[in-house]
Structures are given as structure tokens and as C-alpha cells.
Image 1 (cartoon, rainbow, N blue to C red):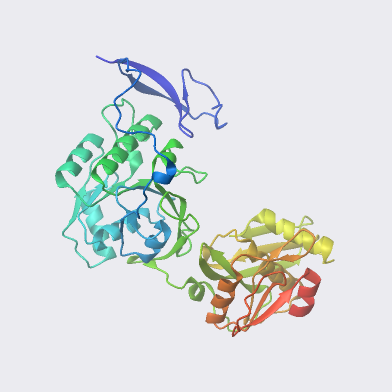
Image 2: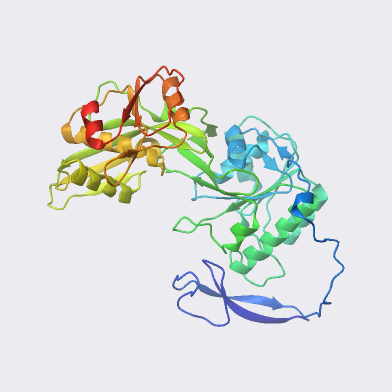
Length: 450
């Protein structure tokens, strides 16, 4: 019989320690070490050379082939995954509670014309059926539910059912009999993930895992979990807003720069084909402090509305607040305006907001942010037919941004009359239906805008 011993695992990063410590030396977190029972198996002496079928091969001789993919009914999900689900791949999707992870995967299970094995360790079969009835009228006779947390039972049923697709909600609820610790601990997550990945690769069945996240937005459990899986998706958004963003933090089969946009409605998640038309409000009157930024998420151009409010500081110390935009970058832009362009903003409150609950870090937003701040400061409205795409440097210069032709084409398609860009951008010589205003410095930009 195997001898059991205990060890201490950090619940944040998964590092193992022989005794308890207050702080994890690897990640620096305090009070995250938990004692877990580890099974110590008998050691076997391995031969120095094993009979392996693998052999050394020159990289030039390696033959490559396109990975076969399964197209899903969701075009947004296909975009993020790089064209569809690869056979035998393991995808981990994380997000805040209530953001819509289970809803997204249940909609996928109901609409796919494949044999689906849906495992839930958090909800009963009746709860899942009630949500399925609310989401869609489609009844998928090939969708099989299994409410179980035992890993051995799940894998036994999966091998017996032979599904085309497996969904497990969630990995933190599973428990293996080989590990004598509670579900959600580092040992359990590592053991269960290993067995599921082994099943997926051996049977060439794609698997979706739902993962809980910690208070700082990271997927709970050992960091090795994200290294083991093929794709890591992050489903985020503000629960007070309707829009949800699906991003790929890791993708072995495609790009990590693409995003998918969904809207949460009473019938579930609805795909947003053209987010620019929805994210920009049609104003009935022109107001100061509003501008339109032409941003790019992956290869997808998108127009966002930037709102700024500049007012005299009431309590002496000026406030700087931003929603959806990096507050440190806002402070940098305000410092550039004050130092390089001479605008007195040091004694004023500045509030910035990207409408729709969207968060983005595209540097091309800088020019639209500057335009909104100057518009609110001088109380002069910007024409709703103008849009902006440019990065601001520390010396006050307007720097070029990537893929400018796609940004100009998107603004032209949505009916804008003028776009402000850097004069250093290499703009194609073909004729556009939108006027292109090229600017080099903030002072030059201010004169042409107002």
C-alpha cells in the first residue's frame, strides 16, 4: 500500500513546500499555503534507455498539415479561436461569476449538430434544462447532461458515450479519488486537468473547461493549468453593462489578438456583428467633451465614443478618474498637454469614460482622448462627423498607428466626413470618400480642430 504524506501548496501559484510558511517565496502572496494529502507511490527504477518509437529528425524533413477544425454556430467564437475548434484541443474559459460563461457554452451545446457531453458540477439537470428553455427554442437530442464531480465517473461515461464534444463546468468542482484533498485545491486541479487532457488527446475529442477566477482576475488554481491547456479564453465585461468581450490570452492554433463581442439579453448572449453602430450613441444635440476614436482589436476596426469632463477642482486637490482607459496613460497625456502645449489643467478635475463598458489599450485612442479633454476644457463641441486615430508622444508629437487603411475604411463606411491622423502615416494613394486631416503636433491639431 502506498505511503501517504502531506505537503503545503500555494493556492495562488501551485508551489509545493515541505512545511507551512506565512508567505509564498515564488509569488509573494501571504497566507495562501494549504496542507494537502499527497499520495507517495513506490519508486520504480527505470531503465537508462527506454524503447521509444520517437527518433531525432531534421526540422526540414518535418511534414506539416492544416489542423482540422469544427466550425461552431457562433462566428464570434470562431474568430477568437482562429477559425473553429481544433480536434483534440483543450480550451479553458475564465471569467467573473455571472458574466455568462455557462450561458455561452450551453448555447453552443444546444446549437451544434454534434453529440455533446455536458458535465456540470455546480447545477442540477433541471436547472440546466430551465436555462436551456429560456435561451432558445432549439431542442438538441444529441446533448447529454451529467451532473457529477467524480473525475473517474465522468471519464467512464465519456468513454462509454463517445461524444464529439465535451464541456466541463467547472474544473474547480472536480475531484479525483487518487488525491485525498478537497475539490478546488492545487493537487485536485492538477490531477483532474492531466486526466482530462490525456482523454482529449487520446480520443481526439475537443474539451471546454470552465475556470473560476480569483479576486485579482486570474484563473484560480495553479498557473501550470494555463500552460497545460491549448487555448485560454477570458470572458469579461461589466455586469452593469450589456456587452461582453471574449479574448484569447493563449492560443496554440491561432492569433491572440482577436476579440468577440456579445450582448447579454434575456434570451442569452447575442452576437454583435458591427459593434461600432451600437457603441456610438446618436446625439440629438452637440455636447462638448465627446469624440469618436477609431480603434483596432486584432484585425477588427471598431469605433468607440470617448467622453471627458473637465471642471475646476472643488476640494483643492484635482481628481483624475477614468473608466475603460488606463488612468496612468491619462495622467501622462494631461502632463503632455500642460508641458508641451501650454494648457492649464493642473488645477482642474478630469474625468474620462469609454461608453458601453468597453476596455481597450490601443494607443490610437490618445488623439481622441486629447480632443475630448480640450473640447470639455474650452466648452466647444466637436462635430459628430469627425473621428480620430493617433498616438501622442511625450514631446507632444502625434505618432503614426498601425493598419491605418483599415481604420480609414471603417470610418468611411460608417459615414464620417473627416478623420484626424498623424502626418507620418503611410496612407495609400487611392481615393477615399472621407477627408483625411494629417497633423503633426498638438498645437497644430488644436488649431485645425477648433
